Amino acid sequence: MGPDLFEKYYFQKILLQIGNIRAQLGSNIGRKKEAIVMVEEPLRIREEECKAAAGYYGLCAFSGMLSAGTTHLAITPLDVLKVNMQVNPVKYNSIYSCFTTLLREEGPSAFWRGWAGKFFGYGFQGGCRFGLYDYFKNLYSNVLVDHNRSFVFFVSSASAEMFANLALCPFEAAKVRVQAQPHFAKGLLDGFPKLYASEGFHGFYKGLVPLLGRNLPFSMVMFSTFEHSVDFLYCNVIHSRKEECSKPQQLGVTCLAGYAAGSVGSFISNPADNIVSCLYNKKADSLILAVKRIGFFNLFTRSLPIRILLVGPVVALQWLFYDSIKVLSGLPTSGEVRTEVEIDAAKVEFKFFLDVSFLMPCHLLTF
Image (cartoon, rainbow, N blue to C red):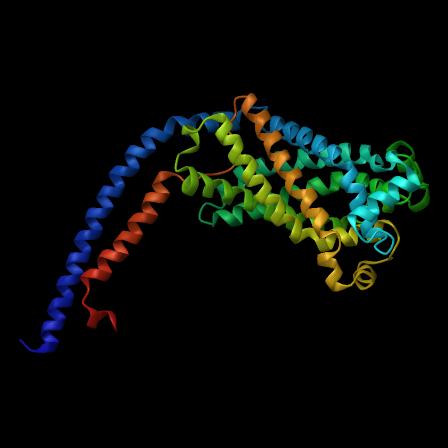
């Protein structure tokens, strides 16, 4: 038997062995999938019943509204510092100088300016953001079955954030002016009429485009980071299924994943946040002029430390508060975790690759 004929014969034998291994692994996977599906089926049925209940998405919206409104209200003093540093960077060139100057010139009450806009505006935004995200994720998961899960997270959060920003924009317009212009108004009650009288209906939505530019990337990155962080923590740190963990453990995972999501999202959205403050306080008349006035480098760096200090804990508290309400209502915590079927399938594919690599002779692997 010549070398070429021997190589052909040996290669066919290897392919036959690979086919047998694949068939054996496939049957084992099939049996394992059936066993896991039988175990997980009651849980999936319960989740579907929860999502099919009439008040499920209403509860998600209420939880999001309460969690976002209260957490943003609590950090109003930090938000006042952030807005003033963005609008008057020469006068307030650091967190310390901004704090001491405002305290000396306007007193302690200055740090609570705009609290109503924070509570109601971000409350409505949180209700739409969290409630509609859960709705759109369920909708797109059934429609985009063959798509990557990250893509489903992105489009779900983007769809929800569009409605959330339409609800937030009027409150944000009044809040930023109240915080950075002490003589403009005292709050929402006199701020809304003054804003309408001076700029009309357009004044409430003048900053919608940069607001979307800030919140759309933030929301998409935040929700996707949260989902992947939850999956990573359960699969690689805790090494247990979510249902096997206690409620405090689940809420701990929610808190860690929320902090990671907020920190990453704050960096992505910082340029648009500076533009929003510049436009609302009439430091520039258009988006292009605002970018030129701030400077490209300053778009990313101005007020970034305080935003990370501000957004990371706030998002973590929002997720913790949001999931706590869901848990108290008998619902599971947020975040998708890969099923054991998907994890085992990935492991088997890798094992199959290793088996084939060791079976094939080196001189065949060079082709």
